[in-house]
Length: 186
Image (tube, rainbow, N blue to C red; front, side, top):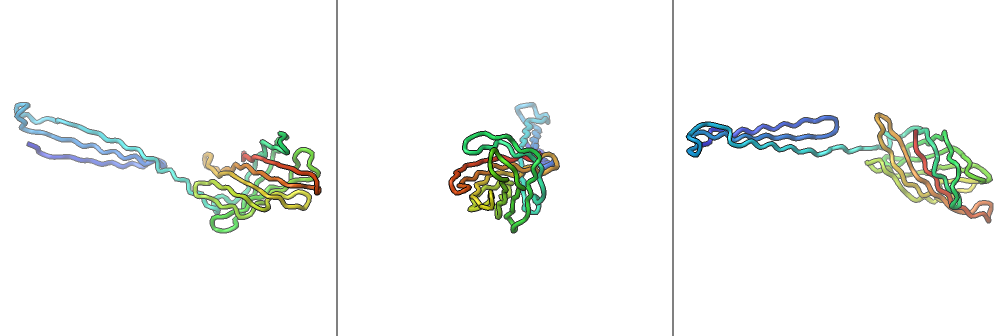
């Protein structure tokens, strides 16, 4: 005969992980198979872990300046030297869109500095972003297309950014170029 059924549920939230634990005990008394003695016949423990880590990046949360390095620089298929100590500026464009700018820097033997100014990039809640823009790179007062792909991420308590930007076009009327750079924040 069953005297009682005991069920205990514990839920502990630690950091951002959700851990649920349930323990059930079944007590049996006066069981003819064991001479009528009361004893614990069965114990079952179920442990379930489900990560509830959901980064929720917002434009307001990523606005700011990010110091870092422009690396993996390629110009017309040739690797070029990295450009250290650069600042990426993120400003708000609208609720889920931001602008990304980098002051002028020189790559290879380009006749002038390149400027990055991509406006209206959509920020996904997981921190990722990508897009193709008619303009976003400037060289010698001419705008060129920008293709960007990147993400914001947490490193300790800090928000960081990394992205790859590609561009192509002609400068000085006859000089064709393709360029790509990668940015990592320190």
